[in-house]
Image (cartoon, rainbow, N blue to C red; front, top):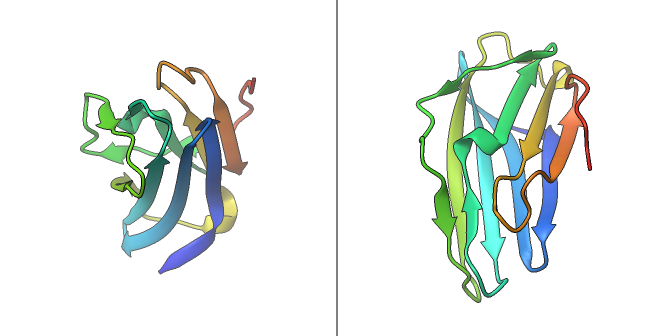
Length: 123
């Protein structure tokens, strides 16, 4: 089941877009689908640690995050999609939120949020 919120639509830099949508993958797991389109002419870097998921203000644990950032090459039509699984046995979309803190060297520190999240500093 897909949810309309929380959701992120971010433009970390010119010709790069990142969209995060949420779906329930099982009773205790929620999947964040991260779609990245890069037409910037240079690689874009995404780390699993860039995305944080909160439920009732508490950060949820990510199941098996990759330690190393992933390169998303620049392509005319290319889109890369990453699925991140979070452990959320009592998931309620109305009480959840997302925080994205960009680690790409060209956009480092760019922060976007949606939903119920603790206070964060946004540039």
